[in-house]
Image (cartoon, rainbow, N blue to C red; front, side, top):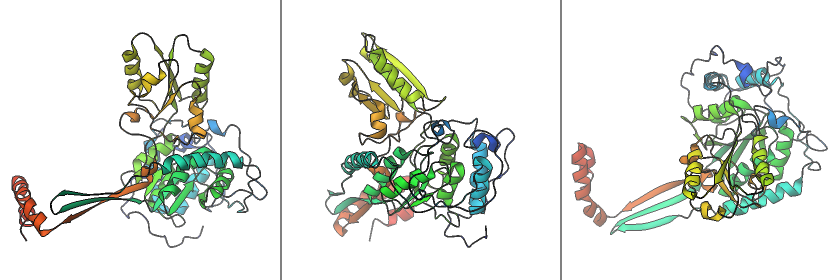
Length: 420
């Protein structure tokens, strides 16, 4: 690849040591889990569906490490991920191509841009997107203007982020819907999608259907680094969202010192809460639906006996991604649960309904993060700006407070601003 002048990149500090630590080499991070031959070619590509229809999905893609449903956590991935991120930050497109070829064994070539939707379940994609859009549109935060005291007026104004990077695991169109649709509803001007080469054509076709044009066939930590810091081909974004495997989550956490991220979305989790006599077939369905994601997925059953508080304590302790409440006391528990990404109430609210169709977002906290954060919402793609207006009269009223606190903290320059 001929080296071109880089667009604006995020920061020019010396990169971290790019050497791979022993025992954490690239074999651990590849999409297929093993060493792959190095492919020729160094071309970054924008993904698109092939002429005449979508690409064929590998039925085993959901079990790969780079699939969201697998979300496999490699042993201490942060060591190798740090090296990949540092290399992409330093060498841009060259590093992205090198790591993609080395880890995924795929030469980056540009797919055809002619997109046909014949093989996509178009109606299902649009129906899911419609519900996601409806639910997230209702979440729009309102601007607020308030005179807190005479002559002192505060304003809180919400604005969309200018650019967002979306990571979509292999072929998972539902994750694209859950991220791109709220971003567009929020008013984000530029949405960049990165997805592993396998299944990229399908994701690109769905993205086009949703009005998203910038889709790159890049996966793993190198995709996160490219969106965070920019390359010759990809301008950096303001925030990165979306689920992924261990390397992707480690990379998101690593770059979060420089760019905002949503939350770590790791191996899938479900806690099923049911009475002893409840239909075991339904309980098994809920567990199987999450455990099929991969070996690191977790499923638990909490049996509700006479002590409802004890059951609640167990649920809260798990702080799981999904909680499925089954049985006659489901509603009585639903309003009391605090630590969960999403709660599904009753036998007709299976967790996969939320994964695909209800409109609720399926990008949710895992690994105990539900104790302190929630899933994606419209506000995830927005930020608020506070505007403060103070009149001469208002400043005179505030002056004693300003002076007293500034003097307490030893900040004389602060104190002097109170008198004008």
